Image (cartoon, rainbow, N blue to C red):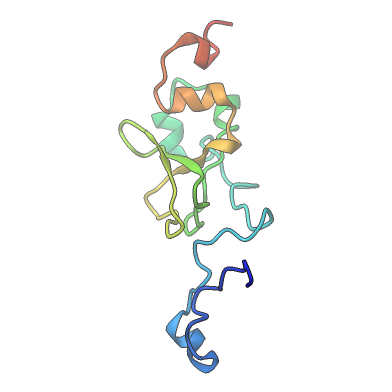
Length: 132
């Protein structure tokens, strides 16, 4: 008996699979390689609305906050924050999520932890580097 997990849509006859499951692999993580839209993305520094909203951040800090471009699929199970929210809270993405026109999603793993803690409103000096 094989431990292999069937591909989504494999239960359908071959000739109809594409019609019945046009996005059959959407939201699945395929190994460690894949598109990473946060690489080379615009930063909070480049986006005027975030630059104003995060006015207490220095320019060099804003340049360290990559924002996913519209249409980017979020990584299933990864942690993000949407900086357009009044009180940004971290959340775990599901496989069907993508960045919309009104979102400013930031992937936690791309931001320094002290900067991340400030973004989500942590005020403990030891966690925001204010104690340095």
